[in-house]
Length: 80
Picture 1 (cartoon, helix red, strand yellow):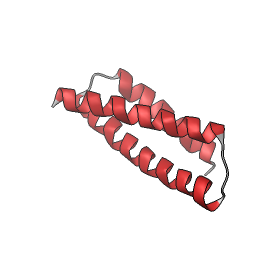
Picture 2: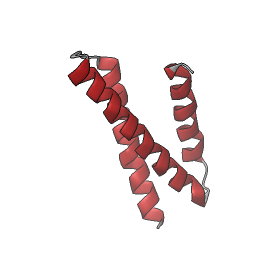
Picture 3: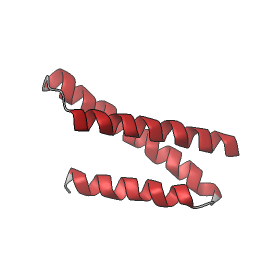
Picture 4: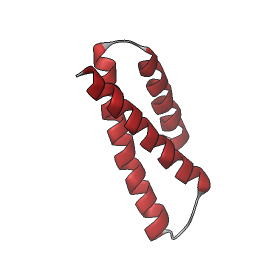
């Protein structure tokens, strides 16, 4: 499956679950954000250390995933 399709599904899911006031939505948002940050860390490792390259779009995606993790962390633990 192409990476762009996975990104569209992930960010659409983040948007929809972020709007819903369901109790399990914040747990799902946090869990998917953790998974995305683990994936981003792996891709950053490959990009910087293996390929020895710099991609501004990739770095922007890593930053967005980090911000989503922070926001979803705040939302999840404020409801607990």
